[in-house]
Image (tube, rainbow, N blue to C red):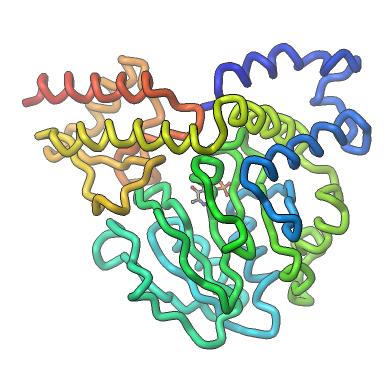
Length: 347
Ligand SMILES: *Cc1c(COP(=O)(O)O)cnc(C)c1O
């Protein structure tokens, strides 16, 4: 979802942005108009996340998936090994790419319990010679979220924050690199945000294509080639909207309240359930199952008839309610109401 106010602005701006006679869809990325859009987006992102001055903000393309390759290509350096923590589907996908370029040490994994938790830090088996440590701060499919930041100081810490960047306050400085595709919480598909500490820029393996070298994008202020101008513009509108709504504290409060309400319903339901360990439950993505087999398709149909869509999770992973930044409590209440009604019909 995008906030309604953002959609309204896009509609208003679409044919003629701020009276300049052009649509954002038509602008050159080298012009002063787009220059002001991307600069404001970066300033608002820095402001919201309190990004320290020794970090670069990059507006790239290729989605989260390209970061799965760019991270090892740029950070492995002369070391050949990296530590990955597996908390589900997305960690596994990141590791698949990393294995093309080096050794992946699975420092911790919750696979044996069906990715129903975050492995406690005391159990992580970090290697001596890792070039970096990678974790996924919120696994979209498993519905598990870190409520803490791993205390890694000796090597660069890398986080995939695709589904929870800008949903709460974080300490950027604990990470060497943070990445997030924009289409979950910050706008539309096409844009990937990378926040990278200056000291880890410029270490890419010699085989790295220039387009995949962070240094190339740092040196060219995200304009080495044509950036995804419209997606950057939409992200800028969403960032301004977040500020206006009260910033990251307000987003966090909403996510806590919405998810708590949904978990409370699921825990009291005789038909629906969520099996994630309480302390590690995501504030953003809530996967759920029906205790009785054969009812899933019926529920999807019932929900759709009640105006509730996109409740299918990844592939065969069941049902999921995703509550990204634009979701409202009203939307969550509609879902709970429909689930309750469905439960009564099928009791
Ligand atoms: C959606 C998602 C991605 C990347 O998706 P792309 O389709 O490549 O943009 C990466 N990590 C997580 C945790 C995600 O939820």
